[in-house]
Length: 318
Image (cartoon, rainbow, N blue to C red; front, side, top):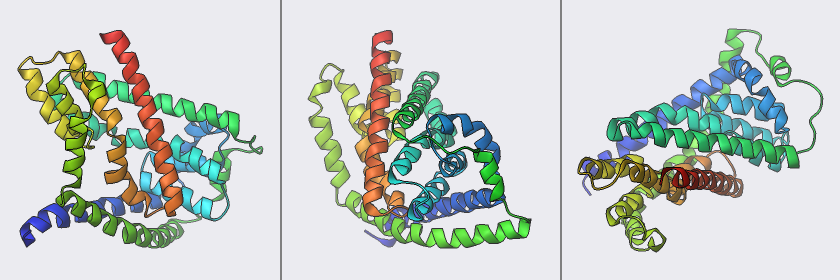
């Protein structure tokens, strides 16, 4: 591989990744230092109280609407200091899936709408429903398994942590940012480079081929649909959408089958999404064992919620 190809394949994407991770962490850290999460925490209080999650989890939930990296960093630091238990860390990370989902929703909808048109409304709407179901499941599980909370309110405790001046807030934000970004990028960059090499060596292509030839349980689908599902299961939504558009234009599949194809690809993409997208930056925030535990739990819950929504769609649309 020549230098130009290496820059296009690894250098530039890695620069973009580092830039957006750093920007998200910096903005999130500044929001945290300025105590702006209080305003969202007020709205989140009924949910966090219902799930029996503490003020740290409530603040992280609020932060996740602005930056998922900052929210997870907040949880990791609280867990390391003993402010939250391992159980609450797990519940809080799962609880944050909804604001994290909504953080990326505009981009997801824009891409889907631009390629498949009005079908995006159905597909994205079902994905939103799955996110709401995940949150409901976490609240119910927290209510059943977490101990009762002490008296007090999340916004009140957040007020106790607010800075006295803008200068203090900026100093606190820069101090936290410099400490956090070194660890995150120190692990994220080499892990990303490793997965780039695995891609170049053909690992993910081999997995895609394997899945395309071993999806016998989807034999009831049209053959061309199976190939789209296999392509989307590699974790690339745009690739699956681009392969689906010609089938719609040619009338090879009905609109309801196109939506089902996207839903199935979403469910089957969980393992690859974990390997290629979630693990690199989780490994930079949490200890390895904790990172794996959180990723497995979040992707299992995500896949289960999408499978439930997919089953409901099949019952009503076919």
